[in-house]
Length: 367
Image (cartoon, rainbow, N blue to C red; front, side, top):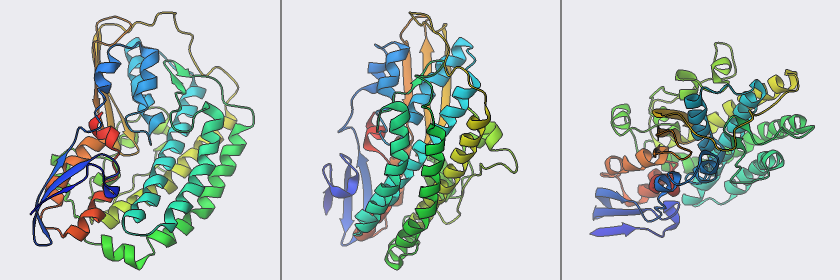
């Protein structure tokens, strides 16, 4: 039997379509069919100047908006040879880690929904709101922050904001065990995820899988440590708060465990950034730009460790105010393609468990 899952289905996180062939209850083959949400982001980048691109760049993975912006501005700044004020560097790092916590909490809450448990999502959204409030106070946005600018940030952080961030981090850290007991300590979740959807390190590497999914299979790669940007070189020094979370099992449970532990690490990193910013003297958070910003001729690939994996922008400039080409390498695209290897041989009942554990955003797949 040929069965279509989606493109409108509660288990597919949006308009993803899975064409699966069944032999009884067993999946024989699976083909992820994408493109239902394609918005032509890469072509839209080419007709906007470098200030306007930030508005578009944070939308393909709407759960990682701040991190999406970073790749664009970091690439442009490097091609311009621009040095960003140190306060902006640390503030960007702090905001990126808070954004990572928001992303991971969303999946920690929504994944149990697909297994039939509704309670965890309420807990996850309670913690999200703590972090969401301070991000909204700083940037003015709840999902699309548009707070990065070429040369730094849109404006300085509000007075007293760092104290409120520290309070929010403390509250979320104190409540996290509640989520762990609901999900990781749940025998039904364990039964539905342990040994299910095992992704080997070799297959993951061959498909370019990255982020928490790759690290759950023992692929020990994190660009924050291995190719540091912003303030990560200092945070990931031996004895620092930064560490890379990995597991060996490669199953759905391991992916869930990595996601949860990464929330704890991101809270540690955010706390370190708060302390650093509190100790820094007052100063600018951006560089004054010319009225018309033109990037020198050349090309550059800039990759960042987004919450869901590698996010890369390949920028080709001809010395104009708009890019000649801006190619996006999104994390979710590769993470979804590997489903064609994971699903065959599994039961239909396990398909939802595996699909949910791949932690993707459809807009990030289709671009």
